[in-house]
Image (cartoon, rainbow, N blue to C red; front, side, top):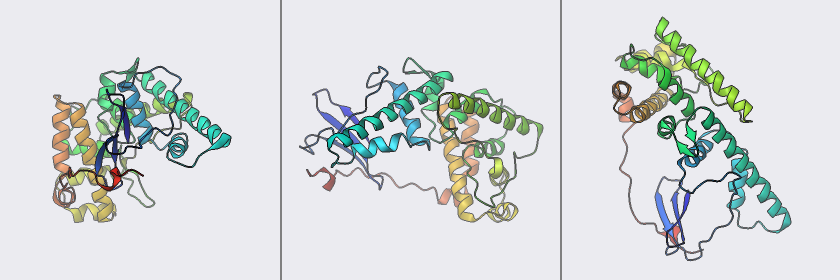
Length: 300
């Protein structure tokens, strides 16, 4: 959820339910609505600073929530009272503030944020919504992809979203070529630099790249049948479709982040090559309903 101050001085809350329904609430909907707590940041910032928004978004996406979850859990608990509760709240807020500052420091180190303002790198990063977002942006900003075709770009994109399970395929960078090996080394070198920066900032390392799905995605994007792809890489149909949709998502995000560039067109071509057959059928999206909030707007 997101809380904003209205010009009239009241609060406005944008929220999303567990089912995906979006709501916009204000005092007229919930007369008793009032803040339950606040998180104090040691660094000065404005409420609309996009650098702060980007840092918060990365905190939510990363699996480093040990400092974040206690803070929000406290704010959402109506029965916290007394000195112990206040001390717990203070410690939790301090952890969140510290975690946020560390994320900002990493973003500043890689020139995504400057004085709480997004740089061109940060603008692109704000359009990528995967756990490996920073690795994706840094790689695609530096890699020479001019010699790749759509299927090869799809295979490269799979490195950044694939999460192998036990007995998952381990094809390595595919197709085997000097160019693909060089790109994979570049991704590894950039990640090593990122991990060192995260460690110096006191953050756990981000996810790495995993090339195990590259051959399956490349063959699928080249037009191979689902049966032949699954037989060669010994994958379950559901696992492949789920992973292929994740590859298509990151390609769509790259296309948008690098709009009006040759990479954008190549990423669109790669996405179309992946989203076909059963992947396309499973990717149908129903239009979002815009019905007015009902029970959630009732005062407690």
